[in-house]
Image (cartoon, rainbow, N blue to C red; front, side):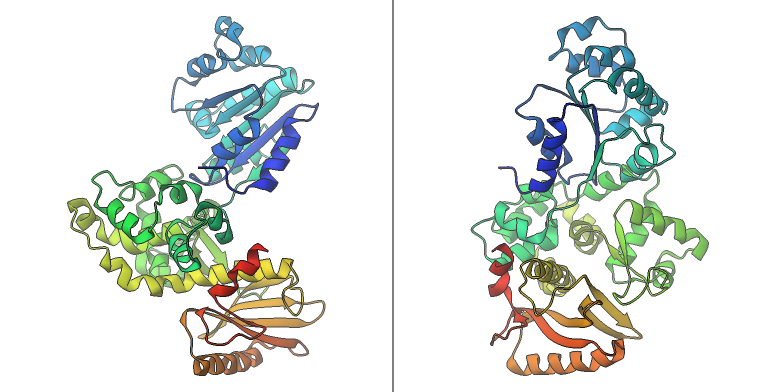
Length: 441
């Protein structure tokens, strides 16, 4: 499959590779998000050493990889300083750098010495990739790290946006793209596995004896956590709609002090995100927890409870289909937010907003609230993954006007909108899937 999007990251990376100075470039992000693909795309027209670190024997294996570009390194003694004396002026990519740290915790200090004493005055390009967000943040990027202050660039790679799926599947309708996004999010590894039509592919995949879906979450989580049991219970709770610490604690049956660090770790590793009402400050206690990406949410909702029948090859895809519209409600809210952000960039709204998010208070909610606090303008938007009637539209707009009074933005000029799967009539601030091409203009 062709390289998709990542143009900004690719441009930034190539600029660093073309510089005349030493560069230490850190690229990190969750597994499957495309770090290796991005890096290999950036270096493909250059001579480079690429090494994928493993759990042991890395000094010996690195020498073997590097000797393909620099044969003389075969005679070097097995230590990093000796190796990099032969690699001055080269592009060196070390993938899954956390595996080097696991094998030898002193390796970060060794690399600091290599940078300071051997590479800093050369035009060597050293690129370190890592999928363990916690380890890359703490051991490589933090001020406590021996490498702190040595890096010249860092890229935290995120999943692709919904509208990038059009590049993977140019012939599909928006409705099927929403269904795919609910499964794969914008994670290239999963998107590349899908062979449309989506439901036929998923049915075949779930019947495969060796389907990756059975143990994918364990694979992802064990890269970050040594004991995944409690973490899985927390993610299961959030996937079931338990979004507050109290609700999660009740599901997991843990004390508050026990669960706080787990939640913090899940946020750091991007399995969870914590959201606040868009009108609240960062100190607000109204935070709610949500699954960090759609694939994890899909897995805990549909795969985890059905692992036995999937293992036995008797799982019925109809179990997912009958609930999927309910599940896509939350997914579509995220897509609608991305749609409004794209319109905002293109000046396709009555005003330019500087902040967007949900709002909730005591059982009342608004799916999306877009604010321009300087101009005192606000857009309230309801999101529905279903076809609406004209009566539905009138009712929803009336309810948004009522909720606007509860939010309490006195003196704000208020606008009201709807994003739905399909609407019978079009208005300036009423959109459905037929409008989604506007995000690509």
